[in-house]
Image (cartoon, rainbow, N blue to C red; front, side):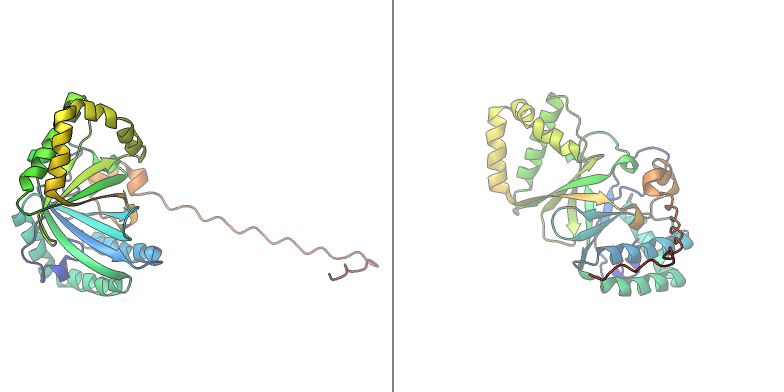
Length: 298
């Protein structure tokens, strides 16, 4: 929904991944369609950008808008903020676009914020992605309890989609064989950037999980076996144009999650404002004793 009033008029044939659309009391499977909006923030404008993004959150709350989104900022890679909005279908996404366009007051407020937001950005890109359940792993994850996403973006050479699919299935089987749980969701970009492109979303509670992954690399290689290890290297060499891995941290200040989502970890998603510390009272200046000489200036 975020910035949808402007971009829905320009991008009429995109696809999406929603990690926050569902509003039930527990974790849900990844959404079928995900809209990703990527903003490249000007150097030194991060704090100003967070402050302005709070305006989008406030506008959505005033309108009691039913479509929610999560925001996250890049810890590695370019200075970017990503906004994720999930939908169960394209029809649901279309309905949200139409409802936004019909709400003139809400649209006007969003457009005014978009104009100001543009002053803090160097670029922006809207993407849509489709969940690839056949390539994903693990059960539902409670994203409300997570703090990071590790994103691995695979740009596959045209005609080599099967190489990527085979590689993911080999790795997934190795994790299952080693009895190591590592849930991930794979989305295939359907619009907004050159393809074929796949993004693997790995939710994390802590970056220490990356340390654990590094430590068990040998166990996974053993589970794959030497033949599959050689096959994976060949599939990567033949099929991948580029592979990029980055870490993103969730930003509660810039997110507009559902109340049920917030309730699962309110201390993180809705922290109480810190109490202002009162300035210490000024001490009365001591008067020199009668007859005392002032200190000499150095």
